[in-house]
Image 1: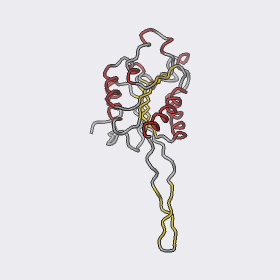
Image 2: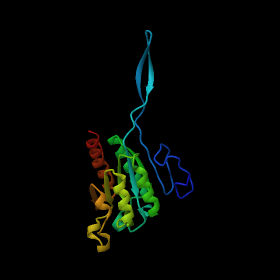
Image 3: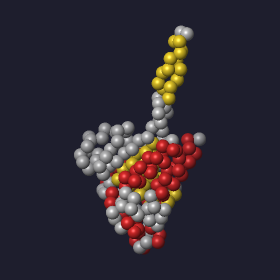
Image 4: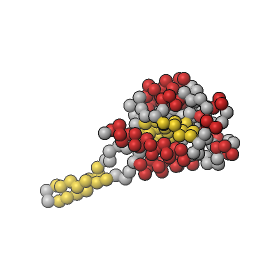
Length: 200
């Protein structure tokens, strides 16, 4: 098995229950176990009952997002990527979702993560950062056959012209930009509705 994170840690199941740290992060949120009554003769006993699995949403971040809070705070704010992960985890828990939160500076790794979402995740929230014009990333998102929401911390349409073009948008159901890290929470809220509608 090839190492999954930059630190050489092997991952048997990239979207499994174990958390990843370092450049590749993963967070899973599960509700507390519920219990059912099992009757044996005249005696009722409590038996743990596994909750149904929560819909898994991949929250993927592209290059330089690990510098959030340090890089041009006038534009991107002072919140760090850890703050974004915490916000996403708390929002997902409120919405009844599980998340897999990751960041990479490599295009190939980001594409591989998108490919791994097919058949495992219920949706993808992605901040492609500098890879907005990657045709390979666009093709991977289209092949995943999942609802995609694109997020940007800044309003790319008010910035330099070269930042205003996104091929990723062609695979996205919607785009949220310019609302800071709160855009991630809004994207998760919208994704919860999309997943629910898709399951009906």
